[in-house]
Length: 433
Image 1 (tube, rainbow, N blue to C red):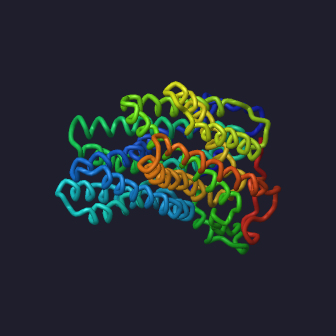
Image 2: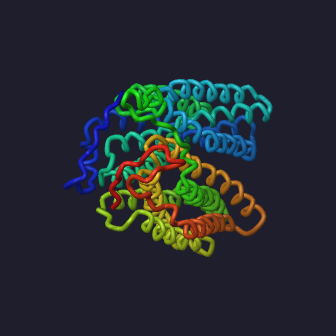
Image 3: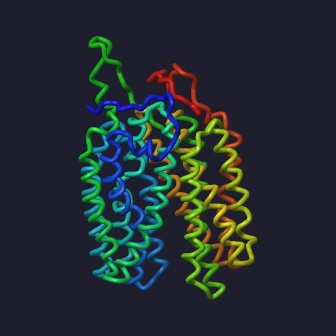
């Protein structure tokens, strides 16, 4: 059973150097980075492979979207199982299923299988995608329980995610275009298998499964631990809506930037504009994690998300490349603080026995929001003016902000000692900056 290697809360200021010197952190960070890289390669690898074999971007996008929706719907259940039975118990069969499903999808595409068969294979491919990011965040929670460094860890993970989603698509595209259209998906499956198994092997840093506490009872002096679904925590439901709005920004930006640059005859600028947006996200994430915040996280989330909604609302009116680049940079700058603060709130409003599940709900919400935004933005671009897809980030963030403002009281951490979900599981005091 892993021990809680917690960090004292006194005399600690947030900093990446101190965070990365946390004992045992590198044992899960390095394999975790290798295992989460394929996640960013999956979508583009499927698009490039299916488009090559079918000749249709529509079919390729639909198969890829099916994978994303399946992942978003099944990820929370994967997180719940990881909380109850341990990350290793979920990862070992999960990476094997994902590898087999990915190879099956590759073979079907190369053999000219009917479209329905591709959709059928896309479902288990997405559903079995290992949720490495949420699992790494849960391990930081074990290492840093009650420490101000949790804010820094959330920022570090956000930057790592963004770096992954910049590097992964580039790597996958190079493989598919430079070697073979199937090389991206095959490499994704291989990296998932190797990285996932290496990450699962780090048993000492994984959170204690809640099922392990069910054998104890009052008679033997051990407290009974009962798993409570993260979805029953009101604040988690508010955060899910919040992260759906963030997903609408990612999806809307991807489609609309591509359509805009194509319309002005400069498709090569698409990468530059999206890279500017991603750079703003990464830089603000780094800065956010290095600040010793004195403002409560729920208030920071409201302020940061208001700024995100305002900047995203101006995208549709941009009439020049320079103006769009500047607005895209500002949107990226506003996204990272919202993501980081949302993940930080999980540590204070969700019982430790349900945090991996909570993280996967948020990750799945981003993926689901992105998939929906890609679909809606594409329809708007086809039916209306060039740049109409930028209305999607505006609508998604404004609606999410309205919900968050109305239900903001649910984001306040419960007082120390208050019972959660029908009196099960007394909360331990958690430091709130």
